[in-house]
Length: 402
Length: 117
Image (cartoon, rainbow over all chains, first blue to last red; front, side, top):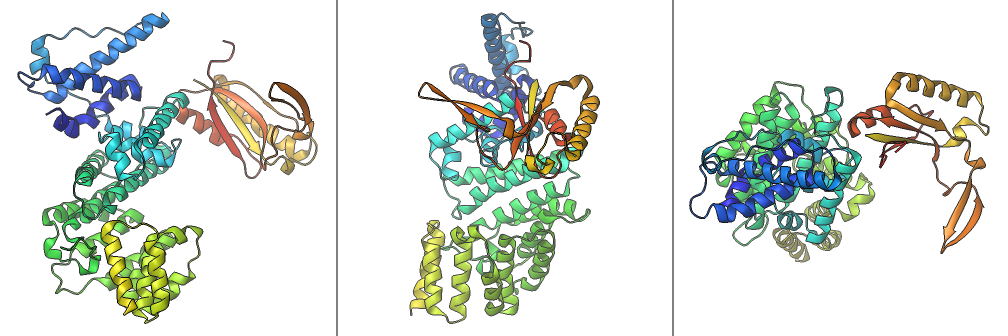
């Protein structure tokens, strides 16, 4: 019961507490204490408005804690909160102010280390446990906790404001928020099977992008990200075959895709198309193009996708975009053209980038260069791919051994 | 809150003396900022070239005196402001306005206590 309430409203409660007390630790601790009290208080009958109950109790806990500190330091006392009656606690529905937007901007402040931003957002705004985040980010829980602690201390010590930034810095700051959510979603998306521990996590990404899109209805890039996350999640049921092997996008059966989620994505896309296109808008359009495919009998939309990648490249020319475009080039103009493009890329990071080796392996194999393809497969497999991807690479490698 | 704003630039872009025309030009820009900041400006100073720096180093309880700044870096600390700001964003907005001749880094750090306490 408490867990379900936290899933649904934990972020909202934490955000409201943090905005009121301007102290992330205090907000988190107070909510934890309120949950502990709920365990015994809710045994007979849970309150009519459990989230409101938690918010109310956590507010009192926070005030009590501030008062104790104030007495210890003999400073000014915060105003006491009127003692609620039992009836208040069970029936009243205090409106929890929605401060999540402010909290997102705090968690994604450019003064916070980029790696900590996503973790902090998932912890505080989405209410995921440290354990869940540590698993998704493939790091040990103590390391994650340390990262979170450091980030929270920076926020407190450096005086990061609990405010939505002023319009003149809006662009840069919103971009940091969207990049953070992209990093967070990439972790959820990387797990193709999407079973167990990641299932709820992907749900959270749908929730937070929806919340952000509702709060910023005129920001095209925000609408675009909400659309992209939906299109990508919609394809999850088709990403793994019966044998646990990854299925490339063009081979996925569109009948397995989640149609309501795709429709949802299209609604967000409508908010993108009325404004000038930027990079996230184009990415959403690429996803939409794929999701428009009704069955495997329809031709894959490669030429349209190539046009979109050209547009993306004109706005953002980086090795990852070029690599993704090369996948499309191979289908439209053949593997030789694509390989030439891939081999012209030079970036130190590519050596450790699995999709780079996987694409080279595939292109080399299609050109009949079996030996070079095997080497590329080995390079990809050495980078510890996820299970479904490993199976796919293993199969490709054994094919070119024949 | 009070913040110190530390200015790091390659000092050689100002020539090899403290009163070159380049230095005078940047100092004039700093004074413009100081007057713009009004009450938010608490204190500040430009520093002489690192060739004038001397470092007292303590290792294992023993002190030694060295010529030069504490570390040889590509950009050197060349001056600082202490400002009062509502929060980090306010301080960053001021840091963005600190003039540099070419490239440079402006570090923003909160003071533990307001000056004078």
